[in-house]
Image (cartoon, rainbow, N blue to C red; front, side):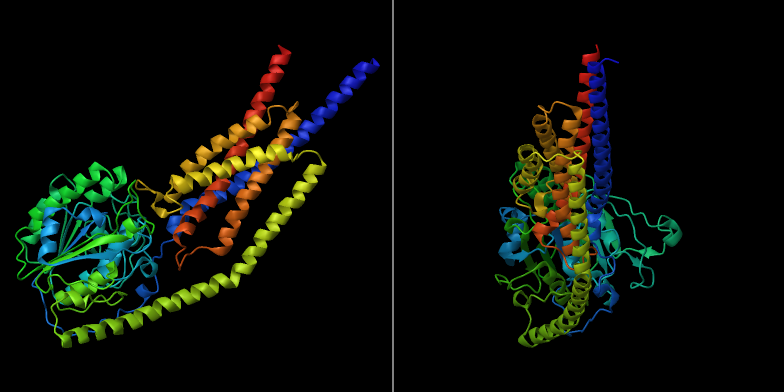
Length: 578
């Protein structure tokens, strides 16, 4: 073979070998990234479910129900929950304003996370999400906390409900004949404002059978999702004899999610809910009966809730009728104060797991009765607070006991990644070009976190304008950032002369990107491992799934980059051959 031909053949062999090693390294990184992406996607997808607690500490203890022996103030109490009605949007609604003029016009505070199911529980049990274990709208098991309905049944009072959202009775299902018996987990519907079907394991509970051993918390529960159905159902229960009537209107919340609180549709939905309540409760005798109106949360102007924005936390508290002092002002009212206040109006003990207090300042109680109610509240609060505090202390000890080990694992993994990168760089299958890295790697993180901060309403759980899952919304931001980084990768690699050079640089981009994505996810796991007895704050509630989604997106970006590079190489080879 001629000398020139032998030299050309030798150079081609060296290039092929080098390309093979680079491809092997790329495939290895891709495998690592895929494993990390699967783990991160699983963690991000389960995050909101991990927030839930099926059996919180309070549910494992007997409720404390001291009877204050105060007189009954109202023949019947109508507790109205207008889902998603912000405080400022509750004004200039004729029926609600008329109740205000005849009674109490006040503001109450919702509880974080300001989602619906957690705060239905806050209103009806007096237990906030932190202690109830109901933290999201994905809660899938009946709440075994003492509730207003349980206290009413114990007092031999009738209980009824009317709603256009079917989740309310299912949240408080009980075993027939044994209200404290646990119920197997269900897959309750995940949508906040859409009806779903209950699905308990048939072998365990036989709930789909018509003779399932479960009972509704309401003696008369009416679900009317069709237009005008709520007015009809509400009027029917109002015409009945149940002493405790719970009405839930979901239409306002649906409009808030679809269009935002600043929209004309939200205003129209609020006016429609007001008219429906007027038709349902217009004939209530306020000389003998009482109407209390609250909301579970408000909405941001763009739509969404879950965070601690003032417009989300502040909700109306309107009370009028028997037992209410017109013009009175409650002191720092919260949603957990509603159930003990309703209990006082009906002359029965408050739900025994509650952490709220009776709003005695708006009730027509004698000084002696106020003293008795306050004493009963204090006895209940002392017991419940101690149980919650003990559970949080145990959880904190458990987290701290293993935090050092988790940090060690994260540190060792990062060190191993650096050692492997050094070895691969020496073999020239991993190339770190600072100019390329400065263009490509920040592209994803800048775009991704900018979208969460700006479009996602400043790293707040209220970033969900529509019903859904935090991780699902974050994935959309991640995909947008992935496209930007993919384009940046292709632009930065455009001048590399060979496939080996391009893949080696792509490997460097992938390694840095995966490390920068995985390290925060590891640190988040070390700081806030599930199960979450205590709740992460609003920013962390977004950041924990955000860093997990970032890992999955980094792996996807690298896989797409490799795929595009291979296509480009094959295309160029084909062009040269033809």
